[in-house]
Image: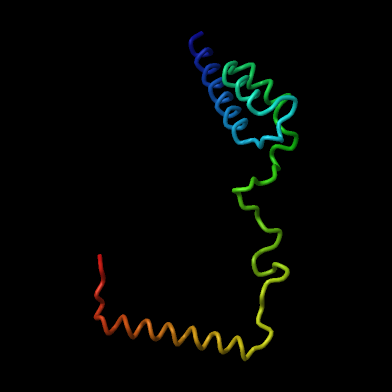
Length: 122
């Protein structure tokens, strides 16, 4: 009997933590039937029943594919090199000039590193 109670308690705790975090991370206008603060209080004070009610009646529809918040970055629809509007050199001379300057800077950095004799500040 204790084994069943322990598993049920562990399940309830996991469900409660999931729902609590889900309520907190849900946007203010995305909850159904109550404001987010109301759902937070229900889930907080009634762990099992509040969690089940949150999943059934409060969680946003399509919560899996939610839109990113203001502080989150959404993935672009295209890989970086296929992105429309991405700058690509149209003039091969300009591209060659850029690569030449990169090589010159790299050689200058290597020369300075050799002159200092490998002095590093650790």
